[in-house]
Length: 350
Image (tube, rainbow, N blue to C red; front, side, top):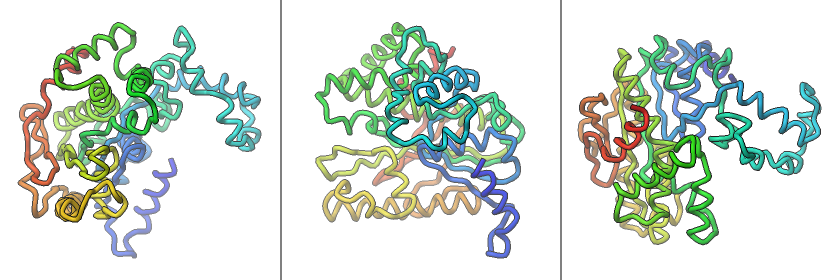
């Protein structure tokens, strides 16, 4: 709602600053991308923006009814009476951490519904006044049909869940397998089947790599593809898809095309990546791509078409061709990249 208020301010005040209130683009990465999905889904934001860019934005929303199941137990653990907003405002960080709310989500029997399965207390809520429907339902609403969308993710988004763990790989795999279970399958059997299908499609990958790939697809990629499908099918506006493929060379390539790295390229501010980029020749290669990406994003915000020197012509996305811009040292357009992996997810929902 704070973002809606900011957009209302832009609508009412941007013209004296040289801006155009009828040509507003919202951009969000990661949690910011989830915020953009929420804006697209909310009646409160209707007419406040005209284009949207979602970069590795998880579509993870939970029914408000399940939030209501979970919240009283969290408040009880923090010794805060239900409805006492002032007492809640005084709770310290130590008390919040001490509440062990994440541990509650592992209780047997899934007492909190979707919250127990997805295990993400910070997930947004739908079936509310601000957000009446889940994102994938809202994507076909009339208010979204005139908004141009640019959607994408990083090849190694899922590495953010496994790489930082200072743990033996086997333990990291076990922990990773317990994350966001509801996005992979609602039962242990479904999750085991999903992991087995990935291993069969990626026979040369070890379990650690398979886990990373599942995390990338479950949390970031597959629901974004579904949103692009719905938007391209039901809207009058343009839909574009990308995948950030550029694998950084520094630190022995440990980070690769890591979650959030596309944002550094979009802002043309590669210094934020530090040693991840590699040596001088690697930096020069990355800089050329950053120039193209930043120009393409600016062009999309201005005209609705993401075009830039250094990139091939970027076609719109549709379900027949699924043409996706693969952003790399030599960027190219690929139809239906990783179709064999997408087929796994389609079979789950058919």
